[in-house]
Length: 541
Image (cartoon, rainbow, N blue to C red; front, top):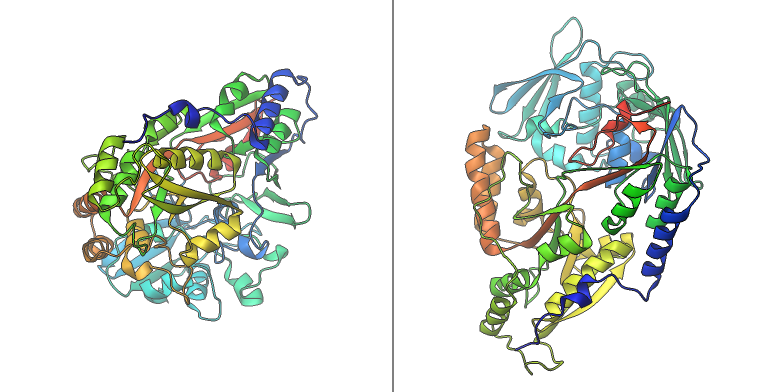
């Protein structure tokens, strides 16, 4: 038997490394810095982010957004027919007036008459047609190109004196069609003039802002208000997006008054000190993002479900939430967060049970070779982001796994190297945070066997290499079944299967955390963590 858990080792914050010193410095500054501030312009909100747009300005074009920041910024500029930017995450019409099924494979979309691009020209069905046609064009090489090629059989502009009606014909019935319209619309004139290479001058759509400038050397993107935004002009003239990669440096910029708003990227341990700091305000909200522990199902050890279950039982997720997140997260049971329309709580759960974890490992043919001694049953390569806070979480998980006799070789990697390794299958374990899980069809993207990455298709998203014919059947059925009630039953079965077979260990849904200067008002934190709230943000006198 391994020795009893010494929780103090892995729950306590480290005190002998650069991360700890930086955190202590931040706390000292928060507690003792002058109450004065330099201040940002009254007509601008300065937003701090941790990374730059991947290949700006190209990546701000909604057809080419690939990472979270690109999507968030692009959606401030290019309005969509439908969006889920609201607390309920229910799809709502933005540029669309209505979306109507004609038959199981045919949908008609009518664009709002009052929708305008930032240059004042009307949004029409022709712009919708041009945007989606470009996604289906082999020469465009858009990020979402293959998905739309697989789903849309044809597009047709419908007779209409206002030019606002368009018909989508699908290759097969598709339950997700309405949410698939959450795609920024690019003016047809811009596509005809510049194709896939929109310059800064062409980076405007029908969203609340348009792009004014992109300076990758200064790591700054400036957006200006779209005065003809269909939902009403933004309350602030400009949004300045600045990249500061270091977590504590972003916080210090807020304290010093050179920035106004930061969403995410703050270690929860600092929240009490931040909330007590004069001049700052902390806001939190529930999240649709999932943090999970991924397995490589091609691995000869991890392909055994008993080993995966043992690993799940060895992790004290509740204690990590209490200690590391200060309670600002909820335990996950699957892809969807509690409150989602497809969430089902009646699934198999894995509490903290190290004794049962050891029993399962013994029964799986991996006995502890020396009881309380230092030898391990086996050793796994565990990869993690090199973000300081994420590393502390990974260390806690690694320590818990070692306490049941699993050796862990933890490797914290820079972002692109980390992502490349996940795409290539160069890992045994990893921790990752998903994008927002709004549509339960994400189970198809993450777990259908056809989505396992290959040498030719590294962009495919079943990175855990999970293959199960029953999961394939259920997720295929879920995406072609029209009607929410019928889909609820299908995705209940998906969640039950996930609980039994454990393609991943769902860890938690972390709260979205927003820190602003006290004079910043009106911003709403959404579960999808997008920046739509900036359209209603202003500064008080």
